Image (tube, rainbow, N blue to C red; front, side):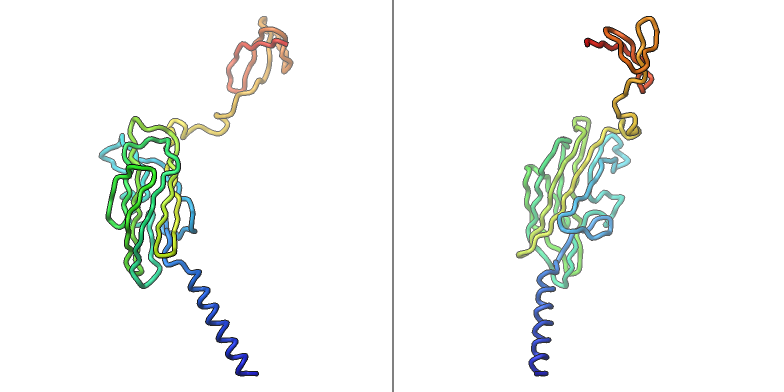
Length: 219
């Protein structure tokens, strides 16, 4: 009985070890020094990345200011890892004049909404996933939503990258400023206050943004 139990115990341990090995990922994406869950989204705002070109904006996963602390593909094993990666642009309304993608030092201009390239990561190493969109005066405010999938054997590692170009003029506008102004008081054209009861025909209305406008009540 004791022998049977020992055999069963070892069988469970071996099975558990095999399951744990199968579940462990051989690689993962990281950003800002933190490991990302598979399929996580990285949000990046457009900014000036080169002080010599202040009029040129760029959304970059690895700007020079981050060094090797931007978006990385990390090999979690003691063996070299290689495979094929796919970049898919799901949405693009910012209209960048150039989109570039580098993995492991090999850079290419992205010329379509789906792009493939080979990659290789050394044992226990990491490679930068340098993906950027350069903007100029013809670009538009909006978002560029993309997905990068790295395949190695039967495994896939996925990260979503969203580049955002926001109107700088809106950076200092508060939520209260963007709300639709409401009427605080109505007045007849001769200046008599009607409080919040709108008189028939044409009258004046004082709004919460401080402006007075002519309004019409057709009822």
